[in-house]
Length: 359
Image (tube, helix red, strand yellow):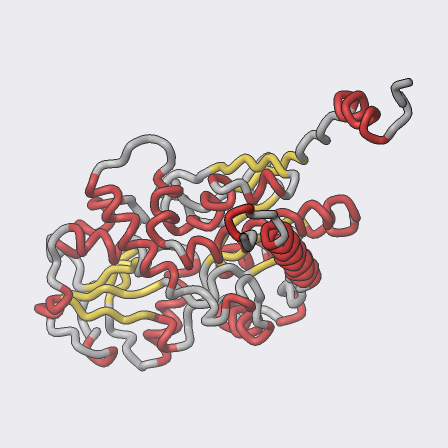
């Protein structure tokens, strides 16, 4: 008689009754259009890291002229530079940094060498174009620090592409604010010889705050389900970034998406990603960790005149707990993969091969 209660006979009907749990939905809002600045998230999406974490991630982009400041309506997580995010938090928005993806700043001042600018002491009587908000504040601090207050600060809108660097190329300005991976790449695309520029990366002067981090509303961190959701998202995102850093060509392909890209578009994203990679932690094991010292420096730097009491700023608008939990989750996942590899290898080693049987 057939055994209808055997384990084997139960497998099929039970499996037919089971349905996969619906993926948890989460919205990530980026501070700029789709580009290599966010390659790790696109890799995580394209390579299935989010799907394997049980997540359905919607990635939204900002327009090119965005001021980087969160939060955007309808988003769960925001990618934004530390400076604008802290300014938003200081204005009353209860935001918390759960990971700092970029360890270094990207803000720089691009100057024409034919204007006579070779060093920070050469800004006298020159016109310097600066973006409004945090960049203007940072550059004003820098000029005051080097006792070069005779330079003329020209408020300059943040525009995409060629329009963003046109005032420099047309000699309307001697210097222009920019990001090394964005405006710096645009200048290269326009055929600007690097030898004709003097570039001041503000990171070298300890004045610019680190670039992109991940931010959430502070009140959501009291919800265990939200914390678990953020942890899964961060673990998958960090896996995407680590994969991207190890496979830059694939990272560029995933960033560009399924639509065939032109050669100039591919070259631009390739150049951009090469610079973005240098903004990361030197150790991939520390990727996403916000250094408390960098946070404190950013707060001190961003104190607007007249000086605002430090207690009025969000001194603890960050948490390491989500990052720690994400790292633990990634370590468990890596261990499971290794054990599965060993199991498959062991099974393969014990497969009977008649050709190897002694005659």
